[in-house]
Image 1 (cartoon, rainbow, N blue to C red):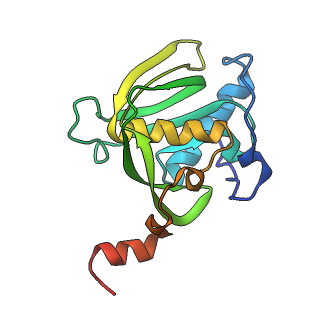
Image 2 (cartoon, helix red, strand yellow):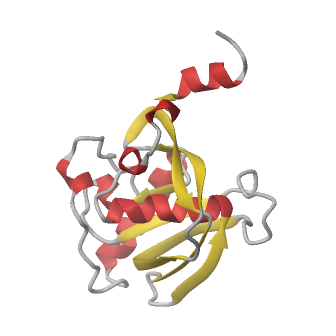
Length: 178
């Protein structure tokens, strides 16, 4: 396995719609997924989409660590997961602000409106269907990574630019320090 180079904001691959994967079990897709998981863990991150590693395919990996899951019973920890050719359905018109960062936009965070509850479906490298109805952090991660497949970066979803800043500054402000 190998750590992959992450595309940074401004790179054209991040702004284009990714192509479907024709053979989820192909050796090159399996290798890509393994490398993406290793890269995500090394970062450390909770999600990584193929366009972020310069591959314009509809693939992403994610996880929900135990310390990130919330009080909602549907928001439980999830081990490393791959979704190939995913589809999502927003199950509510209600949006909640969710603080997000991105490996392709290092050092910045923002409050992004996301659907509270979603349904998603995709396949893994063995062609097994993965489908879940989720909420909370889990729903937010999937929406964020899915956006990458359509060439959307989280600042494009923002509705209040006052809730956008450098990670260090936001942490200082939250701690009540000047």
